[in-house]
Image (tube, rainbow, N blue to C red; front, side):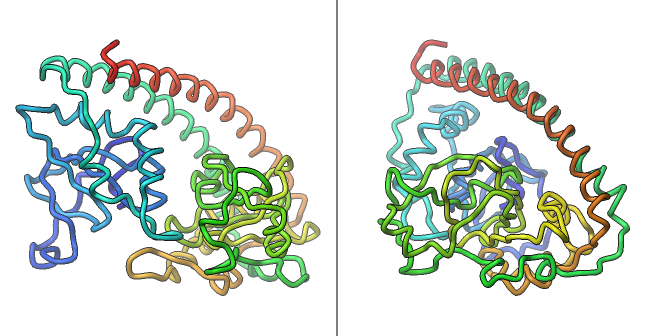
Length: 362
């Protein structure tokens, strides 16, 4: 799954003996369109065209494979059609299953109505959208480069620092300072509401920066039952199912909210550690990352648990050194935010062009 990126591109893959991959994988051909079927990969737009070094490849069983008939539809045109936000929203509505195992069913893709102008016109449209997407990708890469500046700053200052404490040691002593969200029948998908108390999930954390995507709520009555799962400004959230190890600090302007079972929330002792420093350790400290990677569990999907989180080792420099790092990181983050806003505006323009392309106006 990692080889299929959210920007519509793929890795070239690795070579392995056929006997090792003849079972338990999804076969596809070079040039096929791959659609991630499982949450949150589908919502993150993991839809791309396979570009590999061989004619035949194999990948995750969590892929739908779509092979364009070249005399009918251009593969790049089809790819851009499938990557539209409208398809993503409708596909999420049609998902089956529950929790972190919800999937887009094949009949949803089979039933999509694709506008089919003449093949030369399809290729023209695809080339225009390819160029727009390439520019958008370069802009996004520039933002990512700034983001890596923060990582480089952390690694240069603390990457070689010896680990001396665990996450459990820097959490507040109160019961529930390290907690996951409600499990099983405690919170059913049918209990989500259109307003009320916010519910935070993987999508709020997956980019390693707090963000709102799908808005989920529970009623105030339901919240009363789940109050112990409340998250507060400054809490550290880490994904423990699906895309594991992504981490954010809850912002100061968060409304009243709880977290789902897909996240672990940590309320830190501010006299010992800065929340942003703990986030940086989760993301970038070699010993901390090695601990998480070596203990990741799950045959089909990776998973972490609270025991793994609590025992994660990390360095603990003086608060003054932590604060100095956080101050520098925030300045860089402000620059990144300004760049990201420009990229977002360009993304909206790209969506507008995409909509025009599939309504015969491009």
